[in-house]
Image (cartoon, rainbow, N blue to C red; front, top):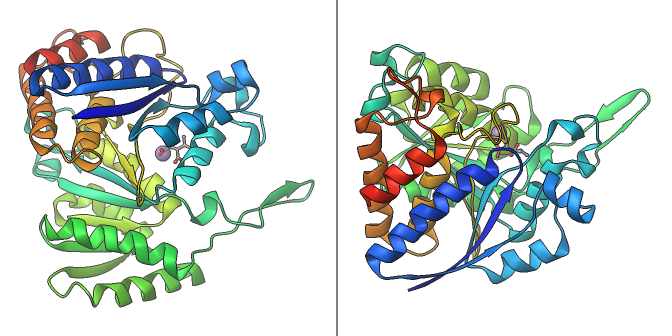
Length: 350
Ligand code: IPM
Ligand code: MN
């Protein structure tokens, strides 16, 4: 099979982790006899530097041409004071919107080898295996009106029926191949938009009588995730809540550097680790590449339907974790491994 993939390294540690992930892709292509058609583009702060805008037209064309896009990270401290529309992050948000990747799948699992890496007690995190389905192209991130002036700043959280329906279908379909449980997270004790969300989720659930549906308020959900994370199978939630709760997921997985994600729409797939650009360790070969590598596994599964290949990547990650060769964020007992060492070990294990 020919795999047409766009690589967008982005900012900070993005270049290092995507480079390791591309090596893993090459190892997969070699082993399973696929051809790779790779292209590379600019997104985020690097794109602002080189073109004046965080999501240049050329990048948009490149991602429309590719079957799937792998993004590293965006964000640079020098833009901290810039308005949202002129920040590196605006590039990523623009791309998500243009590709219409409305469902962001963020699996959170505690690998047996990483039980000690989490700051939470072992018996709490052991066996965690959940997936957060975060709505990605609506809510506060995109709502109008929005603005800032001398005496007021404001944003709008709004969802249409269609927006809630489509991501709800994604969550219920996923649950069918898992433990058949969906927990929808909202703030319906305060927000109209959440009451609407809950109502539409209940409507859609009628089509999935085999799936058990539960609702949880977002404040309680944050607490339950660290109290008893194994209760969750599929967690469905809107954009902002999903952003926040998936960082909590990083604590369950041992480090946010472990978390991969897949952003899916009707046609395109965008794959991005959950972590940010980590400017404090950028360029030092210290970043954990496993979030990016896990995102490659997700790409093989969801865009290309290559289950065997995806499993090979995940199994290789499992082996490397068992070997103890992990980066500093996972608090290894011995000397931490570098980004390149971990990447090479995964490629070799394939
Ligand atoms: C994430 C990130 C992004 C988001 C930022 C970089 C815009 O935090 O993917 O979780 O908020 O969606
Ligand atoms: Mn985030």
